[in-house]
Length: 512
Image (cartoon, rainbow, N blue to C red; front, side, top):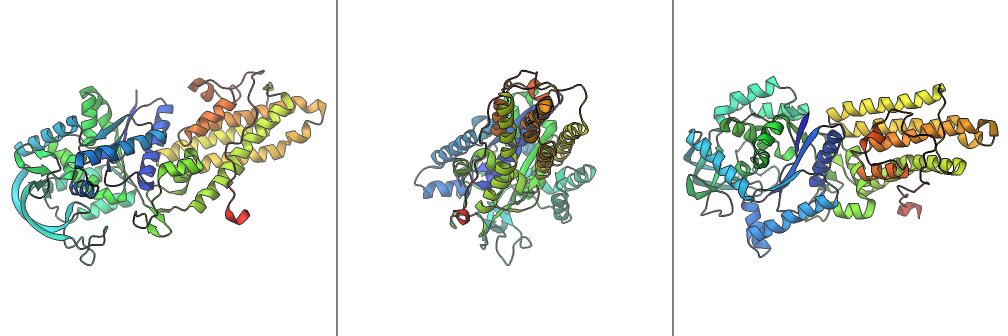
């Protein structure tokens, strides 16, 4: 059986779940559902990153110890994803005992190999990023992410010989064009690798930081948070057994936002090389969600919380907007105005209206009973079928390239065709002529096939809506019913339900 391994980053527990976390999680959930529906065995990993300076500081500000603070925020992430219907296979915490043990084993192996050494280093340290910066990386002397001048720190620490693996990493990237995608991020990593790669400081002295995994070879130090957290992608599989690791690791696809490209594109593959482990299959990098007021910030009060969006607009509508609005790899703007416009235009007016019209006509003209199809179909019926077959083919191609917005565009293009088919065939006029009632039954049968096909195509993107469509069609909850060829989804005499408003229009202030 074909297997797929999909991961989100481990979300740092210094902040509650917000739009950025939600987007990454939704795209991985969408892909997981897509692959499972296609019959592939899929392992979906998410979780929380719980060690380091920022967690210790956040706990202190909240008047608690780091473990209690991490417990609370980690549980908040898990319960949020559960309430959002996220279908993860495993939720890992970097405080889990098996992960701590695995990190210490890898550290010991790399140390014994001679790739970790003790030395002294002075550099510009950003507590917000929890890493040292070179002068070249600073912008006007400030951290590019936090717009603050980092502190200069000089201390003795342990270092990973990352530079030793620079040429090997460059060769790996050149030999695998889709190792990092989209291409702009592959180019960014290669540009960084044109300069000599410095060794990586992988420890923090306990005199400065207590909250971390102790080094197995020196109890006076804890592990640098990235050398700890990145290993989760392997420790989670290893925890499930060697057979699970061997089955899924070769198909590992990581999904991250562009701000953590360097740790995932450089630190992580060199760590794997040093540990004697195979590289991941692909690193997939997306852009930022930008608010009208700039990047999201708690201080600006513009943080978008997923459960609030679910409560106000419905989770499927929120998922649709995220997947439809952002071209993977590029930045996108978020505004409630744009979200409401999408809901009203795409979901209420187009999808919802089509389903409502079809079911209403089926109920009105035939009391919900599906009529028989003739042996030969007119050209317009074949064209409708072919348009949805084309949409499904395009969707598969776009999903392979992570172009979720294009995949949804393909479905909505077929939806537009179905709406034109209704206008073209005009069953609401034809029904007035008794001799044409059988033709009306055929037209509506084909339109029910549209709704059935939509239930299948939308399942990865809008799972609740897909289930609702299947229920309205009174189809069993199995793949056979949804995957039958066009024209074979319903037996004549099958009884469907009446219409239902799937997406009520949202009235804006301008229309009140």
